[in-house]
Image (cartoon, rainbow, N blue to C red; front, top):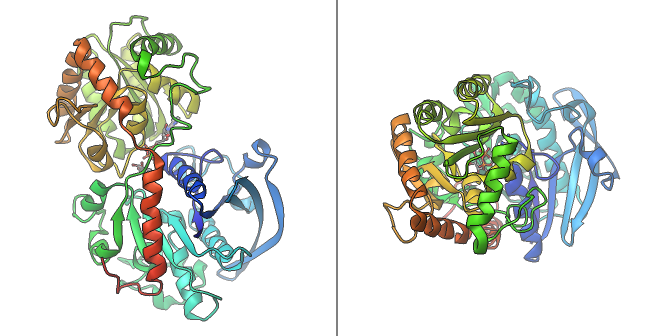
Length: 492
Ligand code: ADP
Ligand code: GLC
């Protein structure tokens, strides 16, 4: 199959979170399984400097945004056999320090930026000489592509039907903008109605994708069910329920070529399942040193790495830690995002300077070092479509402590579910007391050498490799190809 993947971020070229990891691994695995894969992504500021092997194509884009004509370019890199990247260049839109925001504020022209990008994706899908069979788009930033292609097809502008698949990595980020932004699409206003792109008077990018893509997926079976409910549906559960037969929940994989403990340039002290106790002890010592904590192997070390956003449960984690830090524990935190949560973690650090290590910012090496050197990884998410950090921490023998939601529910086994298979800890009701109680359960496991050893072994043996996941996408692509043009008439 010839598959064109479109994404606003992809590792290692650009990344704010798991979306970037997911795209790079999906593309690589599909290509290894014999497909021809193209990845389209914006050419952000520093990419060319870091990857001078990326070459400009002889291709000038000239795409309308309302009555403006916007020019852009296409750069390319053949990364592997069957895997080609296409970078969309547009100086003004993409040559900036951030991907979506600067100093915690979204760029005000994000709708222009991602309408332009989506138009470029649709253009490549139509005119790339290798003629992709299908386009797979991700999240709100590229969710307009299915509509752009459907419309072109309706006008008879496509030489062949190009079916589309939309993956929802996070239903809460929808790309909602005032109605007047719709003019930038140059699409007929007939699409701007409640059964199309409009949502309560606004223009909703993600909803457009949900309505017009041939197939929909989301990143775990648990989240696929949750988003049908009012609690997790972010007001789109009604729209989603009309497309329930087109939706599949596919658990992401983890890229063990990047996230492993035995062959990892970020780790000074590699280890494996054979020497996990000593390997982790050495990594913990190094981490305690780097983060300015008391160097003591016997104190359980809890960690958190991630975007500091409401989604991630920071509002229950901080009070739980305030209680727990009165006892003998340590906490290491790496993240950035909301100024409120940055401030509350800073305050925690100043109250417990030898027990809390904090780095506000983005640092991928440190993310590996924290995952390797800590004993427990905290992910008390309010909601979590899949979550990759818990999969990474499992592979590093660092037991995840998670709220039972979305992909966290699907990947972590609590001792209360199976004493022999347990690989982490779960709690359900979203309260700081529940999180603190679960941390206490983890602490008692920490002091019971045999249980700790068995749980670490289970964790490191859990296998979320990508081969299986990519095969599930292949099935979805086949369904999309089989049913192209049958939106609304799909069968299960
Ligand atoms: P999400 O995509 O919701 O942010 P995931 O668990 O799926 O959550 O993926 C998060 C990814 O982003 C992981 O690879 C994690 O290591 C990385 N990450 C998030 N914040 C940071 C940070 N501040 N520094 C380094 N890596 C980070
Ligand atoms: C989103 C979700 C996260 C998921 C990632 C990759 O960022 O918040 O749960 O793991 O996408 O699919």
